[in-house]
Length: 217
Image 1 (spheres, rainbow, N blue to C red):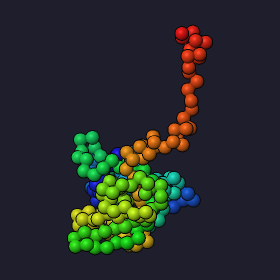
Image 2: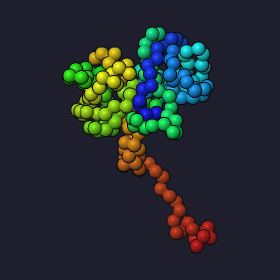
Image 3: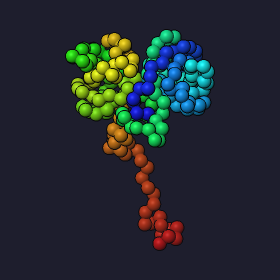
Image 4: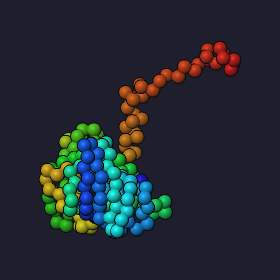
């Protein structure tokens, strides 16, 4: 589990593409402290497992489902990425619950400065927007952010200088693709309230007659 509070930005040092999967090597410093093989690091919000650690960098495999759901497949050598280690049990919960399991991608439609802040508007598909609420939380490229505006086909966040300086978000431009993760609590609520999903739950065959036939009554 992560919190969406980015610890540092790393630099992609190697991309090994495959037909439908790949491998990433990323130069970093802070997130390597105390990290062991098998640990999790979120890269642009995507939870990846560390498979190799060498001087100043780590390597992770990227499976086909991850490439389908995220923007990691578009990374190239030299690109900066947001990095966060999994939250320790004794750590501070500074952001919101972030699983590192991307729900999909959005497209930045505009970036507009307002005094010391920058408004970033992201277009997204209806299933993602259905789980976004104004003043709720969303993770963009792994960054825990508060939704400031919600529209029929997009949502907007306002980026303070600290967040802009610690992450890659303000390096983006209109038309760039970003990873999106909805609030996990909203996803569970939607699932439980979905009448179609509820209808698929098999009806119990245990009734009074069944109990009598099997000697329980």
